Image 1 (tube, helix red, strand yellow):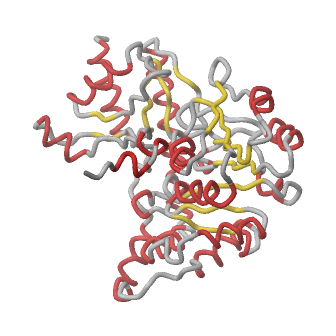
Image 2 (cartoon, one colour):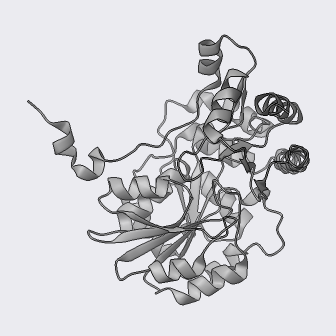
Amino acid sequence: MIDYKKLAGKNIADLIPYQPGKPIKELERELGIKKAVKLASNENPLGIPEKAKQAIIENLHEMNRYPLGDAYYLREKLAEKLGVKKNELIFGTGSNEIIELLIRTFVKNGETVLSYAPSFSVYGIIAQAAGSRCDWVKMKEGFEMDFEGLKNAVTDKTRIVFLANPNNPTGTYFSEDLLVDFLESVRDDIIVALDEAYIEYVDAGDYPDSLKLLKKYKNLVIMRTFSKAYGLAAFRVGYAIGDAEGIDMLNRVRQPFNVNMLAQIAATAALDDTDFLRRSIKTNREGKIYLYKEFNNLGLKYIPTQANFILVNVGDGKRVFDELLKEGVIVRYLGPGLAEYVRVSIGTESENNFFIEKLKKVLGK
């Protein structure tokens, strides 16, 4: 009799898969409710850019063709927008594939990756699946990144350090001074993967100018995505910017038609929809101010955020999560280590109002 766990090996058999948020339609079906609000996955509440929508419709007749393996037009436009060379860009099906490419390409047998905790769990999931592991360094009080702890945790086996900035799920960030100090301290054969999935929402004055730093630090790789501020989460378009030689190595591992054609078309058009991006940022900023005010009124402690979500202490995160589900609001419960918290994505004005109304009911306030 076949033993699939044995065939897969301990790394895979012991792996705990990433748990996505509950779909809105499924919640509505289970509980017999209508118009549920999903504030669990840090999605853009405004939908997709109009220019992306039109570009998709105009190009549907070409979907019998394979996608452009090198994302030619998207590469051209993004390179111009960022002021980088075309051979310094690689595209993936979301940042997840970029993370996987980095680990598969550069982490050899016996080597490890490193990050702070809590952070994006996918770093550890992919590392374990690849036969490696992620060493986690606990954050300081208030979820401040512990760079001294990271430095001390680096070993001769460390190959990649993943730094989410702003960090998910905390929304906290680190400054350019801290990043430069860290880059100066680590060996130049350690890749520093800077995960900037939420960069468009950042308004902190001392946030790193990472593109500028690329010119000096060849071991720096920047990861970004179209899933958040550009509203294209379902299309799965992420990208990395880095030294041309490193990008070339990643491209040797990347599957030839990884980013589908509709995704490439949508992302290329989204770059031109500056009005949508401005509205997304404005909606997020206004929603953040509103939620801060309401949390303060409710006496709830929260972590100030540079992203499009807020980590808020509700005392019993699992209970509040479950009770909010019954009220038609999906937030994110993050489990052990953050058991007192829920993470709520910032929605539209009406979604934020609905969430606060139901939160007050659940908390008895």
